[in-house]
Amino acid sequence: MVSTPASAPATLARPPDALPGVSPWMRRLATLASLTVLPSCLWRLAIAVGIPMGWGPGSDLHHSYYPGRESLVLVLVTLLQEVLGLLSLGLVRSWGEQLPGWIPWLGGRRFHPLVAVVPAALGALALTGITSLGAATWSEVNAANPDAPTGLTLWIFSLSYVPLLLWGPLLGVLAVAYWRRRRVHG
Image (cartoon, rainbow, N blue to C red):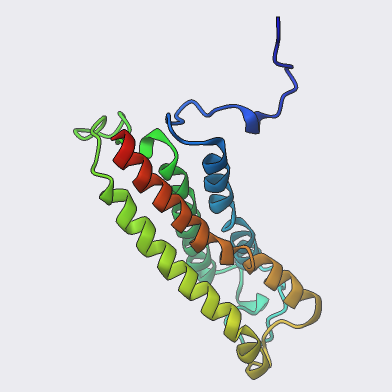
């Protein structure tokens, strides 16, 4: 008799809303895609609460402006980015094919695959373009702005935003896999 040890990592367990036909590899990619936004969100929240992140006094991101009303904008951008990142999980979970039952009047209805594929594909293209352009031009922008971070804070900034370079391509892979799965399995 083979038993599963109680200490088995939770990542190996199949989520309760996992779909048949979704490989563990695709579930991991979706989780990774959703996590790529987290470092930049944490960096932005640090600014929102007034932690100095290397921006000079001429910058709108200088810590002397925070916390304050401007913090609300950073928090709202962070929440939006987190929600969009978490939507990557919908491409491998049941709520990405059928509206959850708790939604009044619409709950339980399946939707056409293009409802998820079109925004995911467009988002993947936009994210890939925006983050690639940002990465390619950052040193020019940084050199032209005397109030931009330098030294350790530049490294922290960079390490916080580099994972976003993966978000677009991962979302693209997930969108293609979702489309193929829905065409085959309905």
